[in-house]
Image (tube, rainbow, N blue to C red):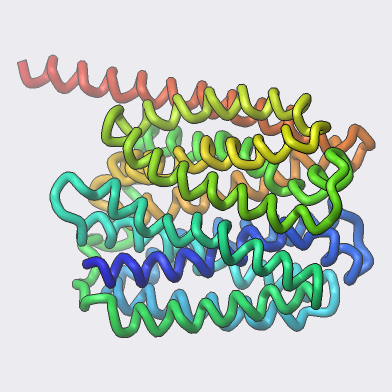
Length: 391
């Protein structure tokens, strides 16, 4: 089980590296391709859009084969197109390659989360899912800063070549460490689609989309925030990315504990309340060189407290079609990535400055809180109806 979870974590490391390294080398990519910073932000959105499209489609298609073979195929795809991204020499080519690179992301994490939960001991599913997400968070401590340094000192394409190397390692680890797994218990496409009729599931997915978008509204523009607003030299961006990654690692494990202490959805609401407070605070602290670094650690802690609880919440809401529901939540994460980057870029493009992105993020997180409360209300109503019907 430990080797299987480690294989998932290595895959998560590669995915985390490619998803977040673009944010650290955004100025280099913009300069190399002769586009503006907001236009370069489209590469973040293109990857996220690939996740949104690929997660449900590849998961439903993959239900025909055992999960270990599907995970292997997804990681091969991921490796090929991330390597090709390194050789894109125009805005259009990189936009297309980033989209294709994102297609397997959601299905890999969605299927992987369900597999991790099934491999875990009873009552330890939160820890097992957190173990898989550890790869993504550790990527932000090691992979993303390394990729940022390579992109700044050599070429931004070298960062994506490094992602390709990690992808090869992930393919090998899944091939040799993942046990043979049965074909999904799904009863087919029509049966899976029935889960889409549940209002509770849509509320959780919408919560993920909008609530986590608050984090990406900040993180998408972290490089110019540190250099242009706080006044640090460009070299500090790599160190800041390490701080952010350490915050993600801490938040990931803290989120698993919160999910065990409270219900998963309540843990998410608590984290989003803290996120609103932190983002508003950052509108003042971002101008201070020490303050901006402190918040660069704190915000990822808060944001990644959400990862495991929200994944558990959506799996619980998609009983009978867990893999599809889990993958849809990964689509939602990346819709949050895309919407956060895009919406936060609007006030920046209109001249309101990099700090304006914090206000956009705070509003998105606040809407997520309201959606979380809505999920709690729906569940209480359903529980009351079941008690009445049983009596």
